Length: 626
Image 1 (cartoon, rainbow, N blue to C red):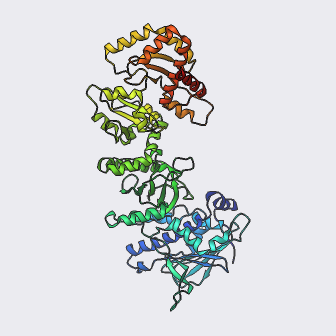
Image 2 (cartoon, rainbow, N blue to C red; image 1 turned 30 degrees about the horizontal axis):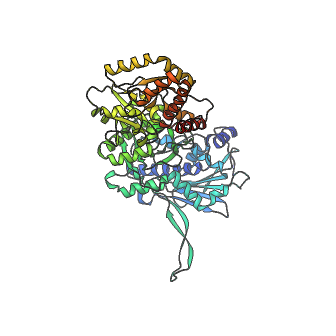
């Protein structure tokens, strides 16, 4: 055979095709199967538009055959085939796409033809030393074989072929230290690659697969039988009519493709036509994956183009706050890059992502409104992600997420939305009150809660570390600001009581200053308060950092220890108030001991550790023994 040089001129260009454009070697099989599907599509289209073309479309198929002895992998189709000139044009010129030309000439709107660039074929040189293409065009009596061993060139000669169509024969490379090319001579490996990338090619892909079965007439003896079977599903579930799909089919697809043992909490199947048409099949899991709240977790939806897998996890299709969603998107309108591994333009994906975001949000809102039990199960698994997304972006997404948030209500004894909180606010109430702690029970016992119970105000109990950061990032909801019950400037007293406490603090200013000095820098201020009923003391804070936020920040692996500006408040109506006034007049050393104990008591109520537990223990024992 006389060898010809590639018209694209050059070893350098082919080397680029093989070594730079494709990052994953197994992609070659996706490309060759897609080319075979395109060839069948072309002939199918001709049969619909040309009465002279008479074929049985039920016979269309792609065959994959492995010969381990010859180290060959063959992909055959009974599509349109190629003439000698077409072999010369399509395979002799790198980056010349016969499929693209067909699309431009015929504009077949009803056919999802895949190929665009004409380089996918050459990806086979990543795994093959030699490629032979035997092809016979439909209606032609002549067959030709195109053969090449790489960038040095190719040859085309006449050959024998009984039927129209194309067979691509790859002579697989020998294994190296870094690459096990023999994997592409393993039936199961090849089948898995086809299932991964080409499971939804519309034509059957057939392979000889070995199966174990009982020998005839035997109950316990097995034999290996080779069967020629279709290995691909062909029709994607997401392209079927929703009315014809059962819950079991949706769930089985979820289990098999996203490897979850549990049924999804919600299935979203949608089809959109417009500036960028697509089908989407989305799932909301009923529980968080073990690595969901770690850096190792990868968000993203599978991205298909005409049923061919392009990306396993396209992160751009999901916002972070909906990163728990599993599923896929299939669109024929995507502008793919030359290798079909990534996207050439992202505005189409942004458009799809925006629509998907709206759809997910609407489905969650419907679940919240119509199936509260299911929504609360969802929120238990993924509510922290929603709250973290509000806080982590400085409230940027608060308007998107605010009505999906739930918090525990002290009055209703259950999780409620912020809208439900507002709907049940008492007349004249101008703030949304919240309190932070480890559990609902512990918060319920906080001294600061007493006056709110007394006035029958609802308080949101925040128990997750991100909760208070979230409400501070939101700042307000529907014009009502959030207020921590432990904030120093929050007082529900009437004017008369407020003036009384103000006078009490003024009259005892020197004593309170002495108590503050006793506690060094541990507190910003010591003062009397009327916010307490039965409890003698509590800690409040001044400024944006609360006690609970201090605890969260102290638990973080950082050397910087942020501290809340704490205020020790003493119940002016409790007997302890008169006790410390007496001590100030008669025994200031004893007052110092009482001050330390009162501060320790306030810290313990807040769930804070004591810096000097031994000293406090000795003081208490000394008091008891007197």
